[in-house]
Structures are given as structure tokens and as C-alpha cells.
Length: 345
Image (tube, rainbow, N blue to C red; front, side, top):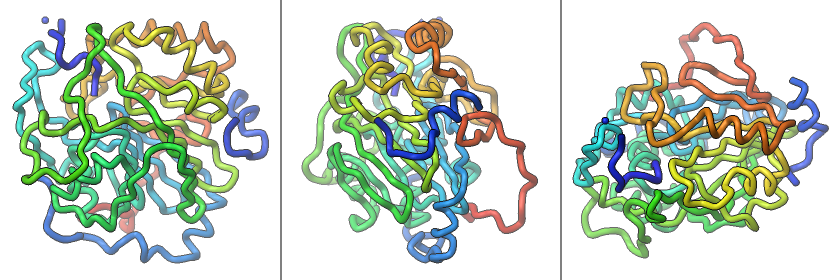
């Protein structure tokens, strides 16, 4: 979530074959699963995935959908986007949690993996429904684990990580990176804290969801595919990201200057990625059917200018909700819908 929630608002990479060079030129859930488990995916499909080229779709906030040869990975999928008053100066921490299955189904396909950076509502609110409806494996912190169990997700579906793990999901490689949550101008943030056991009852409001430590992920979706560094908040551990060297870096835009030299330190630690994609700058309480509206607490233009100044060889791509991007983050032609496309029923 934005790092300004409690303040008044204004009325060296996994190796491939020269990818960096190429890029620079070029109600919570149903009671049971609605689809078969991703474990039933055929070996033939998984072998093909290793040779495929991934596509990327921005889901708003810090969320992404990555597809490669019939396989789907989600990161921080928050699609319901209910109103909390955050963007009009009337923020209500007691806002009731909700998940709109119809909105979610339009965007998530049939995910095999769901990666969760942290447990604030604008990152996790739709994950219980997605996990129960699809059987997808969820990767996240111990706090994320306990919250999902409280919502009725099968504990066997959830992989608890801390940072430093390198996980191989049949050719999709996920590097887990220890990270930090962003801070507002008072050097604080909304709902800090961690859980070491499931709450006695399922959370009901957004304030019932603590941050619970923050992760970043670097995903390489198939052999020879570009590596994508995914952030859920605008702070980081410099030592943890040093040497990752991603081809694509989805970087959260800060809404304060509390983190010293955020962009310059991050870009340097990441090795000046070939493509930088600013995220978490939008108003995530407006529907994805509309064009992105900017969070008034962030300055997207200034951030883009700073990235270009600090990393002049990086190409900056400001995403929108309706474009599917290729592995070089250039728009792909929109394919005609097929009757057999995987989607939640």
C-alpha cells in the first residue's frame, strides 16, 4: 500500500544469452476449489513453457500477471479495489474487507503461483479467494501464511519464505528477496507488526491485516527469459538486492522522501536494469476498467526524470492497465479471445 496512509492526503541476474543487451535495443473465497489444481498441468505444457516468451500485464498498484506458454504467475493481485477513503482525505482504518469474484475473474486467468510481498489489504485482499478458487500455490511470509489459514486456505498450498530462497517451479525460477516497507513523511507506516499464529477469527477490516514483513521477488519465467524484479513497497535492503542484476525492474514510486536517496541507491544496487517500470503510483480504489489515475501523494513525473538521470541507459516504461507487454516490455498485439482460454468460472 502507499506509504502515506496515516497522513492526510491533498482535496548479477540469472544468466541467459545477452538479454540485457537485447532489452536495451529492443467475500473471501468459495468453500472449495472451482478449478482443478495446477498440479494437473501436463509435462508437455511445462516443457514448452521453458522455451516460451513471457508476457506481462500490470494489475495496478504493484500487481502483475506473468504468462508463459499456458502457465500464469501472479504478484500482489489486488483487483477488487474497494473504497477506504485513502485518496480523498477520509481514510477509514475500519473499512470492511471484501473480495469481488467477478472483478477478480476478469484478470487472473488460471494461476499456478501467487507471490505476495506483504500482507496489507492492497496486496493480499483478493489472495484468499484466488487461492481457494484455483488451488494455486501462494508464496509469502509467515504472517501471510497465518492470515490465509484464518481465511480458510489450505496450509499445504502456502510456502513460507524469508528471503534468500531460490525456488524452481518446473522451469519458472523465483528468487525471494528480503525487503522493507516504505514509510510516510513521519517515518512510519500503516498497520505494522507480524503474526506467529493464525488470528482466532478471520480478519474483518483492513486494520486487521498487519504488514508482516516485506519481500521482493525476482522471477525468470522460463529458460532464457528475462528476469523481472518485483517490488511491493518503496524501500529495500541494499545488501539483499546487490548483484541481482535484473533485466526488468518493477520499482515502487515513493510518496515521501523518508528513504534516503531511494532511487539512486536502488538502481545502482540492481546494476542499472535494462528496463525500469514504475509501479504503485496509481489510485487503487478506481476500477481497472478505467484509465489509471495518479495517487496525488506521489510524483510520477519527477520519479521518471530521476530514474533517467541516475540510470541513463535504462529504458523507462510507464505501464497501463490494458496493455500486454512482451519480455522486453514493449506492447504486444492484443490477441483475439479464444473459447478455450483459461479463466475462473
